Figure (cartoon, rainbow, N blue to C red):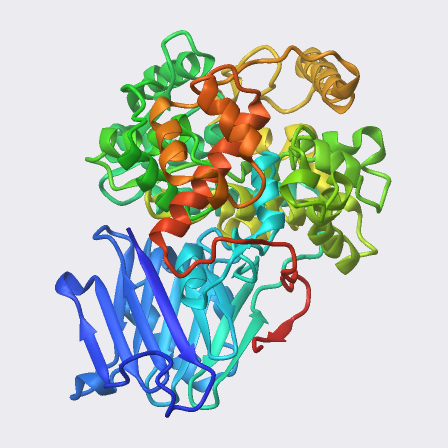
Length: 628
């Protein structure tokens, strides 16, 4: 596992806030770790041994006088023939760090974080990719600022407590609000931002280094398509070019575009260059279509069954899974064991190329606002809450928050960051605001070091190089999958003629394909209608069970007096019924208590208290000074 932690003192150097101040500069075995200790500064960085990860050092005779740049994840310089940054690129990156107030970070793309340390000027840049797919966490108190790839490490160093808003978000099956973490006043860097530290002056600031909105390029569709097709195949090829890479293949539009890009690049030699995988059983539509494509184009395809082994419910597994989650998701055994199983199953492969983010190429958000979307400049936040934030209403928010919050107040907290984004761009159509909202949500919900490092995911459609093109293409060109289907047809014509299923068209809309599109649109509208008004339907209650091993952890570790809030009735009922016949809301709450118990037991400095007084993160300002 890769991670880094930077601690910078915000008080006089005489105060031994950071422990030993004996200067130290150490490179670990195989150049996979770096340790720097200086006055008022601690840096520890390490990454798992795999192709994507690099340490560059300045050339000086004395080790303690060296500067360093550490790159985590997949990063490459735009315009370069290389599929990852080189020593020369990192040297250039560092030169700009030393000479320019804000280096030109827009020259780099991928899914990555970079830490750059200037030993002479005692300054540090910590930056993530444009959409913060490998975003990091930060926080501060009166004595120090801490920046780390793990929220729990920041919280532990700052003696933070649990953030009640974030905890309730997890219990409601929603995303943690953009910029927040599970911990009070421990923030996650948001899209387009980086952190600058000045050790000498003891100053730190959060800086907007990438613009998030690009003005649409008003060209005709043919020109937009040519621009799109000129970029996407190159980036997909970069992502899949290293040995030991496996590429996801499904029946959908997005992976079809990835496959088309690779077929066009490698031609008949693709069998020897790329390995594809499909997940499911033989009768799944994804597997059926993947097998058909593989047969036609002679692809090297591997089937991964969904259930590779029994789920491990042991206490040891539970604790490992919770530490892995870093407070980003509840310890669902199926989800977490799936990550562990997949790592074991694909141990001979170093990287997994996915198609997440392809939704940007095909009007993903149009159903939120139905017919109103293309005309309005206002986002329908009620629809956003229901359809994309998935906030359930079955949690007793008042009881959990000790009457501090109502469910309406928590709904407001969930939507507030997205309302900030909407206000930032008041004069553009909401479809473009929803693109940015989608990217913020994607950053918060599913992408983190958990995925991008532990599973070594590479996401070409979420690189700044691809999104810079995609977000400039007018929405009407992306509508009804027009852009993505035309791109597949242009790159590999026959591939677009292979249907995915009865509702999702693969060929561009024309007279011959119109019936397929009408069927798809009617099905889509019906789906939206049913979900939008699902509260009017009587729902069948499904019962859930908590594993007996987890129940033992609750019984032994979470005494009634030691709970984080009044959950006595819940825990007593679970014990009495042996963890059986639980409502979904009860199951989630027990999992939430296990999450808090395990994290606070492992990280001893995190306070066993839930607070609702934390401040929101800065989302839209170009710069913010970080200080108490």
